[in-house]
Length: 501
Ligand code: FAD
Image 1: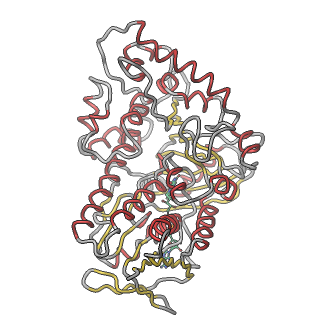
Image 2: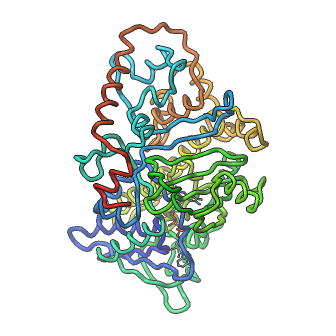
Image 3: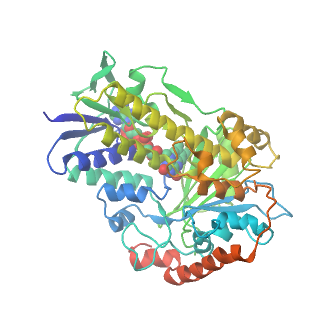
């Protein structure tokens, strides 16, 4: 018999899950009837505008046309993140480095990254610039695709900058066209029996279903109805629990950057995300140290350009995740399941993981506890892994200018195994095996290296280099020259090949 699934919530998590599961389960025959109930009175969070590169494959799996997606969401491309000010300046020069998505494998005897240390290249160049093609493209302001690139493929890996509200609208249209039932109603009550949700209710109607997805954002309405003791906070390790977001016009004559900028401020960090229509900015900060007014003031001063502001929003953030993402017949996806601050733009990525995993775990009529346990274990693993990776950005700082930064070094102590890994990576190069046993998905050893070495946490090696080990740098130089010829300035590409700008 056909099963029914009710998703409560129409933000990106609700619609991404709806489209993906609808396509997976209903492509050949209708096996799962999906309905999405969204409150017309409670808005979506409206932030979440940068992505990681793997989201491309999820959008492709959802059957979305890349050109249409770009046009409908005023999107630009993202090849990585430029981190600025995460360490103390040297001789008045601000510290900065790129974290590209690229995982560079050049090199015969040793990979290029290891060669970089052995050849002692830190004296002459930054690590990211020494080992990656993407860094050269980003520094030149070039986009990641060539005119010949196929949809969802580039010269280097890339993600997007998208308008969050337009994305939700676009996904809603696509889901409804594909057959997902859309109901505008506010859920006020949840009936639970024997640990399962029987129905959710509004003032006008009741919605019964075999399965429920909680995509109600930070509220976690359905999960909270199933039990209160189901949340683990990460605030000891990641104290930023508030954000202020400001949308503004793109500074005049500025081409959209093909990367996100993440600049460390006094009690957190600010994002700058260039869309084709405007710039999204925001300050993620420790709300125990700054008031919202102080944070907004600091952000406005940092932006330093007081015309063209479009709107300002203050947000509280619940940092942590569910112990059980799947309880009874209800699964939390998106912010209802958990949230880790957006330093590496992972919100949509975690939705992608949650929805994909759900697809494979729901392929049985009556999945038992063993299936729920497996899902919960994997989701917890993803969040714990990501927490460690985000903490890495903070704990390596040498900034001491505020209490926030003085405390940051100790944040590693709240991540199991991280202090030992940091000690190890002082004596050897970081490798895949050092992270084995984890739930690495998007961030693996290459990504750790960009952060470790971008923050100058270098291994102290006593090993003599040789000419042979310069070969990968020569190869990378040739590849960079070719890539720069194949690609073009980001704004020009958007204008000519995506009908943007
Ligand atoms: P929401 O967008 O909050 O949607 C909740 C939905 O539930 C709404 O449709 C609402 O109407 C509905 N709802 C709520 N209560 C009820 C009810 N009672 N009845 C019916 N419907 C109800 N992610 C990234 O990938 N990249 C980023 O750069 C990024 N930046 C972020 C910056 C900040 C400051 C924050 C806080 C988050 C950021 N995220 C980012 C995370 C990202 O915003 C979310 O993962 C994403 O938007 C998904 O949100 P959601 O759908 O879970 O919740």
